[in-house]
Image 1 (cartoon, rainbow, N blue to C red):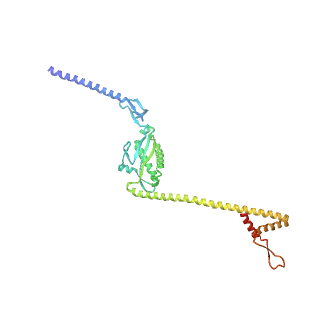
Image 2 (image 1 turned 30 degrees about the vertical axis):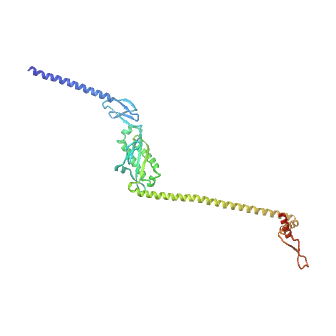
Image 3 (image 1 turned 60 degrees about the vertical axis):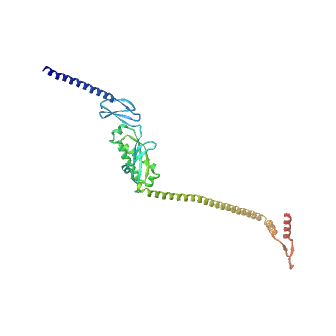
Length: 334
């Protein structure tokens, strides 16, 4: 009976030792876990938001830091120094020198938009942003990245819907990106989300696949129209300056002729007035001079001179001046 009574006492002692060992092991495990959870590191490209029982108490910069263990303090890393991005209409499947992209039906639905002239186009774009306030980014909205996507898609659809399809496909892409960035930033600031939009880039703007052939034909017609317009402008730029030069030349010649005739008329008038003044002072002498000048001007053009006297039946040829002048000219020419 004594032997049977000692077996339970040995078993109880063993159980007590096992319980002590288990308790010590559990305490050691908790101690190691607590020590491991007391230290954490923050990567250089961001900061960590520290919460104690859910309340934000501090923001830690990059480096090694200490916090209370066992879930009392909680550190949430936020990449404040990294430029984040959201892609619309496609996704980057593999980044590198030759990036690979994927496009599903759902991605196509988010990129198809209706323009102001009721054309459907496929707009793919990228929103790049940076977190400026990690606390606001974590706690002001429930899902900040989803909020950014919803705001971006809404603003882009509104801006594209207010423009012509040809404008969106060609010259209006940069202006659309700038306008979308400004409107997005204004809306997100009202949400107090703590992000800054760095850049919005329209990756690819094309018509849907089903209408691409018709769209290409329209583009070819527009290009031909532009070519014809450019050729007409070139011809106009060649003809109009030449015509203007000819017109200026004619006007200049007319002005020169007018000045010549005006100066000649003024000279003749001045000469006449001077002769009139001389005639008024000495009319006999002036009249005699006029007569001699006229005779001197007329006689060299006459061949023969005849003098008729009263009572004669036939004129007498006198002063064969024409022959004399011709002989003088021949002798002078020799």
